[in-house]
Amino acid sequence: MDKLRIAIALILLGFLVWRVWPHIRARIPDDFQKLSGSQRVQRARVTHEAAIREKYRAAGVTYPGEVFVRWLKHEAALELWARNGSQPFRFVASWPILASSGKPGPKRREGDSQVPEGFYEIDRFNPQSLFHLSLGVSYPNASDRVLSDPKHPGGDIFIHGKDGSVGCAPIGDDGIEELYLAALDARTAGQARIQVHIFPARMTGPEWDAFVAPYRNDRPEVVRFWESLRPGYEAFEHARQLAEVKVDAEGRYHIVP
Image 1: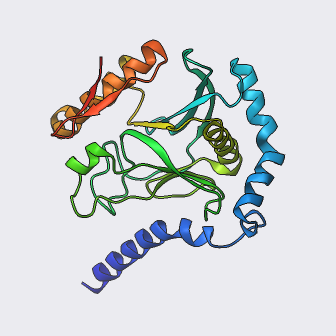
Image 2 (image 1 turned 90 degrees about the vertical axis):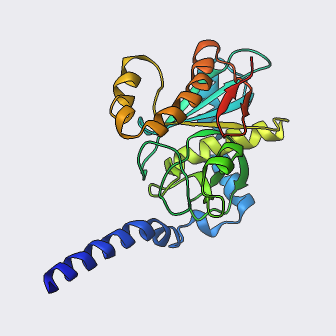
Image 3 (image 1 turned 90 degrees about the horizontal axis):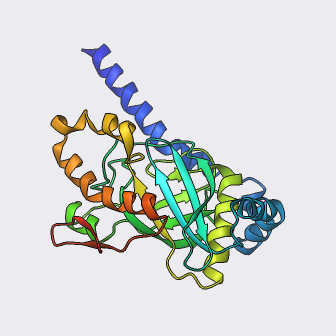
């Protein structure tokens, strides 16, 4: 019995360390974190503005344009798309998500370690983040407020630097500097809403069919939720335009024709 208790205690300790270590490490200041917010943005311009502008040039888009961010959980990728005027969006860049937590499916309560899934926006620019720089994601949205824990749905979902996190998207310091500048400059140029779509995986083709198959019997409620997400994904894949998305009284997403 004592050995069992020790084993359980060690497992719990390991889980606790896994949860808090990224935050402990983030509080050890490096030279960048000693700068003020405005100084961090200026440093990012010196080191990475030329790189993100070159990616725009290669994509055939005038910087900064209108931007859109797509987050693919299974592929562990964060994509930046941009366009000028009403043209179709063009792919600009992708950064690997360096750590993740949870499993396929949406976030439904505080502390579940889940990454959300759905249609969101950037709602905060945080140049003084513990994680280098960060962009806040507008979880919980209208759908989450219906389907998630009504009192404790959770929050503080970010795209940020460094390489560790729980429930967020760490894309490294170089990656967040490029993305942060593109989003900041698009907002400064007049873009009021920067959309962030988070999907469980790429939702088309045989790869999607294989991905979703194990969940049809084991987690049918998650599959039903994905079925309400998929038209938004497909609309963008088809036309490279962002569809208007509405949420009904039951928290399901609907594409406005």
